[in-house]
Image 1: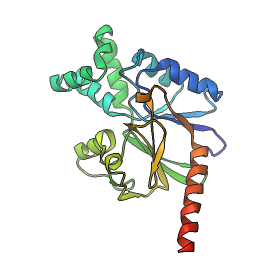
Image 2: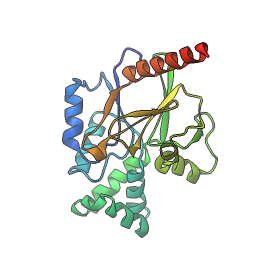
Image 3: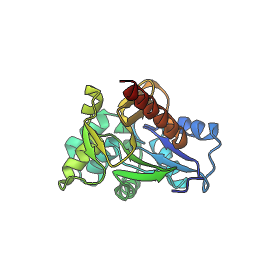
Image 4: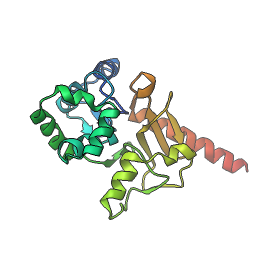
Length: 226
């Protein structure tokens, strides 16, 4: 990734098209010049899930899957009734107003998206995924694909315990999924899902790197004093 580009990372959008548009306008986002990375859960609960997906595709966003997209794929393409019930219970009922062919097309596009990525930017390796388990290595993924899906789309233990045992092969990582009023750090993982509290959080990656460097310098200072 070009260090000269502005790179923005957005947490859960949850169908809130107006909010993501407002966030993009606030920073003067320029398509084909700036980069947008979406951390999944782009759909459900908000008023315009399809509009959000269309916008992200129009902007050529680097898009990662969340657990809500996983439920949609299992419901539409896998015809899994349990997944469908859970999806609709958690905001997926908007799909009743969309033609099945359109939903299938969206699901096929979602299947082309990644569960995670690591970007090299301004001298840092940054891991990006919807969520993160307590212990993870970005260099060696589990052979069992179900374990990867569970870890990167559904896991909440790291935030519940406020404990990160290992987040290896990156300098730090950024995630959504776990609702919070304000973004927060657990070790070298940064969590930015504020959608439940009425707003979409979008951060500029260079600013997060500055925060990480400050925290790291402060920790080193404490260690040196001890």
